Every structure is written in C-alpha cells, then in structure tokens.
Length: 575
Figure 1 (cartoon, rainbow, N blue to C red):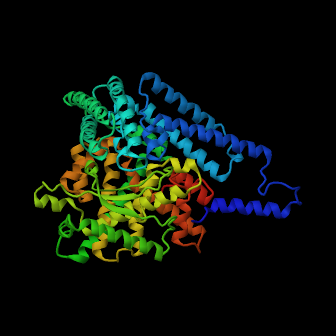
Figure 2 (figure 1 turned 120 degrees about the vertical axis):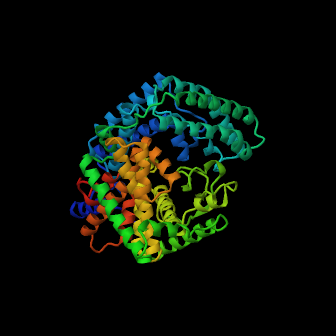
Figure 3 (figure 1 turned 60 degrees about the horizontal axis):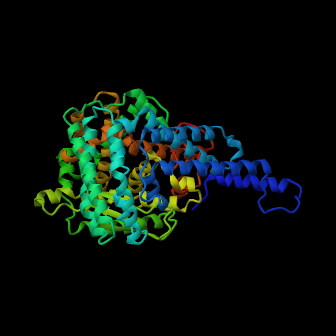
C-alpha cells in the first residue's frame, strides 16, 4: 500500500532538513523537538480519551469494532446519562478545537479532524435532532444480540455470559426509552421500530437458543429479554394510531445535518443540481444501452426483459462466488487497488435472522484478536413463497455482478482490508457514511469503465440500475426533507426513475424518512470522482491504482479531510 502524498512530502521535508543541517550530537534515530514531542504525546492522550468516551457511550459500536471489553453493556439513557454524554462530547470537542494543528503530524491532524467530525455528528444527533426523545429506532439499534452469535470470537460460554448480562439490562433500557420518547412519533419511524423490536424478540426466542444451546442461565435471560421486547412492541403498537407524518427535517436542518455528519457545506440549489445532473446522465446512458439491445422497445421494457435473466436459488451462491473470484483477479491484473492481505470474503446464504437485506458484507472489526472470516451474504428467497416470487426476489445476473463489486471487490471488503491495515487506531475506529458508501458505489462504475465485466449493453444496464437507485435516493432525500414530498410520491419516484419494483420502492421511500443521508451513496461517489480528476491532473504519471491506494490510506475519514491531504488545500469537495 502506498503512503499518501502528504506523508511522502513530510518524509521528504525531513530528508532535506537533515541534509542542510550540521551533524547533531548522538540522539535517537528520529529526534522530535521537545515542544513538538510534548504536543504529540498530549494529543495522543486526548485522542485516546475522546475515543474511549465515544465507545463507552455506544457499546454496540465498540463491540462491532472487536472491542469486547464492552460486551454485555447498554448505554445509559436516563436523563442523567444523556446529560453526561452531551457534556462529555462538548468538552472533548472544545479540547480538540483548542489544539494548534501546526504541532501535529499529518496523521494526527487527520485523527483530530476525524474525532471532531465524530463529535459534531453525535452532538447534532443528540442535540438538534434530539433523537433519544424523538426516534424509537435510536434504542432498538443498540440491542445488538447478533454480535454474540454471528462470529465465534470467543468460546460459547463467554459469549453466552455477555448475552446474559445484556439481557439483564434490556428491561430498564426499554423503560428509559418509553419515558424519554415524546409523542406523537412519525408513523414510518414507529412502524420501522416495531419491525426491529419484533425481530429482536423473535431472534432472542429462536436464533440465539439454536446458536448457543445448553449455556447456563442463558435460557432464562432470553425469556426475560423476549418479554421486555414484546412489552416494548406492545407500547409501539399503541403509538401507531396517533402517529404523525411530521418526519421532514426542513431545508436548514437538512443542510446542517450534511455539514455536521459528513463535513460538507453547500446550499440546497447546488445539491439539487448535482442530483438532477447525475440522474440525467445515468438515464441517458440507460436509454442508450437499452436501444443497443432492442431499438424497437422502450427502455422500461428492455429493463424488464433483462430482469428475467436471473440465477436460481440453487445457482445464485455459485454465481456470486465466481463473480467475486473474477473481480479479485481483475483488480490484481489491472492494478486497480492494492490488497493488503490474501484474505477473501466467503460467499454464504445470509442467516435467517439477517434476511431483511438482499445482499451485504459482514466483516470482522479491526480490533478482533482472533482471526475471523468475512462473509458476503446473499439472502435466498423464502422457500414457502410461490415460485414466481422466489424467482423475482433474486437480482438479475447483470445486476448481481455490481452488487458484488459494491460489497466485495473493490467495495466494502477491500475498504475494510485497508482500514484494518491502517496503523492509526482512531482512523480504524470511525467511519463517515459518504466515504464508506461513496467508495463502494464509486467502485461499481469505475469497474465497468475499467472493463471488469465486459463492455456489453447488458453489463452497462446492470451497473446503471444500481446508479439510478442511488440517484432516486438523492432525489427522495431532498424531496422528503426539503420539498414536501410524501412517502407515496417517493415510492413513485423510485419506481419511475430508479426502475425499482413496488415492494422495494415502498421500503426505500420509508427509509428516506429516517435516513436522509442515504444520498451519501451518490454524493460520495461524485466527490470521489472529482477528487480523482483533480488529483490525476497533479499526478499525470500516476495510475488509477495509485489514487485508490492513496485514498484508502486514510481509512474512512470524511472526504473533505482526504481531499485536503491529497491535494494540500481546502478546496470544495463538490463538483
């Protein structure tokens, strides 16, 4: 993996200084002036403290990173606990803002900026959005039962003991939720939280017992956990009739969310222009590809025709496995990006309790001390469904290859390899939505342009359907939160502009009401494309792989931070 240009420049500066200075007295190989050394140590201590504060406040996030000292813990959502978390974040933010960045190394400056952005995000969500008093999903997300089942990071007895501890805290935790939440709650949020809560109850009642049988005390703990979850579900059901439709953030809060969570400052008109331009670009390309296949048919009819070219439940895993192997070989042969290890993602059917998502990557956290596999999960259709519904559930073959590119090569899986190889614990610990999903979505079109699946109209349509889904998300995020778009209008947008079926269109429209930053897929992709163009202009002899390695060397830092390091300026990340 190549070092970033900023780090190379720092090393070069040290060499020049050494060549022009008189010979120093005997000293360590890499002497640091005492004031700078003291500042560096002080920052390292602050960074460790600020990181530990965040992990303690969100134990499920820490566990997902492989920090199992947090196993069995839930956040304190009492008024005192919430106030303490806000005070902690504000104090850490003030301490980070007070640092003179000139005393920091290039890596430490990145670490500082990542921590500042993380604190900004959490303060915005707890303060401006007031999520713990408005959004019931903020509570169900923290009850991460499957973390102790999916991976054998410790013996069954240790994982069962953590579950027993976690389950013991669930009744109080959910009572805190019901006390905190202000009524009425937006209907789509109540409905989604209810689905999550019922799913957790079912998971506790079935999947955990199957995965960890005969563990002392676990059955009784799961019974209590299930009971608490069903009690909470009953309360959520009571909130459905009086629920509201007031999910929209409004333009000002929407733009503030973009700045506070992604580090991107702009105005609504510019965002709309970006959304419209990418939608138009991809729609025109889809029309062109469809015409090349069947000029006598409409674009929609061609898309429907290609949708019939699907794997079967019996062949989809084998197809995805071959696609992953082919894409990995292509990456290596064409120097698309470095692979920091020889680890591969294993294609598997998703566990029954995770089949709400058609395909996804599940990789171990960077701090796991046991070597654990990464899984590329594909959800099979329910065998109880009619044959036609089972067939329609699986993605068309041309679409699946770009899902594989997004999730595995060179998308999330390869990104995860680079994060785990990063020497900075801060950069390993935190991730920005538009960097993570922007990279994975950028990878789809980049791999098509590089010729990974052949320059055929069918392959192009497979890639473009993925792009148009994300373009529709961008349109819906702006529409639902700044332009008065209803959920029904959002559904129609996904169907008409994203070529999405009715069921998925409804799910995506609902998601937009509580996940407005799902515009990050397209917005992140556009920022990376611009960064590549600007970087390539300054590095005319560098390869595409050089850029990708330099980008991923920054972990999952906000794209504006990566841009500053790669270009040496603070120019706008937006096209």
